[in-house]
Length: 230
Ligand SMILES: Cc1cc2nc3c(=O)[nH]c(=O)nc-3n(C[C@H](O)[C@H](O)[C@H](O)COP(=O)(O)O)c2cc1C
Image 1: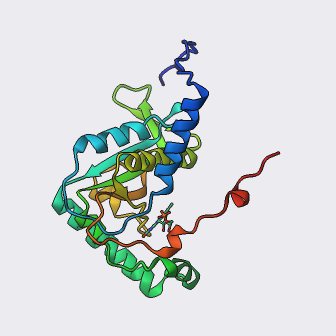
Image 2: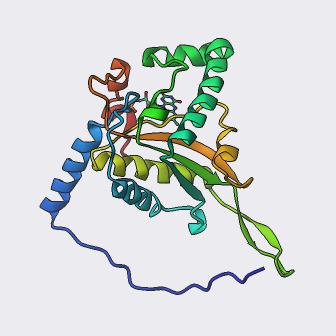
C-alpha cells in the first residue's frame, strides 16, 4: 500500500475584503439564492458547456472528510442515454406512485409531482452525482488493488451538491435535485464501478416557457425558526 502523504504547510491565500464589499457580496448572493426554485419543466434550448464544467469545478472545491473528495459527476448529454434514464426512472416512479408509502406520497402531494419525468429528456444536460463509498489504491502485488476507507461520504457529497446547485443558480441556470427511488439503474446505465452509489440526478438548463412551480415551494421557514444564537 502507498505511504500517506506527509504534512507540508503552505501559505494560505485569503483575500481580505473591505466590510462594505463583504456586505455587498453577501446580500447579492442571498438575493440570487432566495430566487432559486427547483424547476421541473425545461426548455430544450442549448446551454454553454462551460457553465456546466465550471459548476462541476466549483462542486469539486468542496471540503470533504480527509480531503478524499468522494464524488463523481457524470454529465449526460447523449439523447439516447437520457431516454434510457427517463424510462428506467419512470418505471421506478410509477411503482412508487402506485404502491409506495402512503405517508411519503402525502408529503409529496403539495408538490404535484407524478411518475412522468420529462425533465430528464428535455433538459440539455443531466448531471448524475455519485458518491464513492470507498476509494481504490494499488495493492502490494503488482497490478492488484485494495479498497481505501472513505470518511464522511454522505456529508462531503451533500456539501458538494450544495455548491453545484449554488453555482448553477449563480450562472442563471435552472435545476432540480431528483432522487428516483430506488436509483440502482443509474450505475450500470452510466458505466460506473461498484464502489459508486448514485445520490442525485440533476437536469440542468433553462426553464420551459410557462414553467410553473408548486406554491408550497415558496414557503421557507422564518429566520428565527432556523437560526439560534448562543
Ligand atoms: C435530497 C432531495 C431529493 C429530492 N428529490 C426530488 C424528487 O425526486 N423529485 C422532485 O420533483 N423533487 C425532488 N426534490 C426537490 C424538492 O421537492 C424541493 O427542493 C422542495 O420542494 C423545495 O422547493 P425548492 O427547491 O424550489 O426550494 C428533492 C430535493 C432534495 C434536497
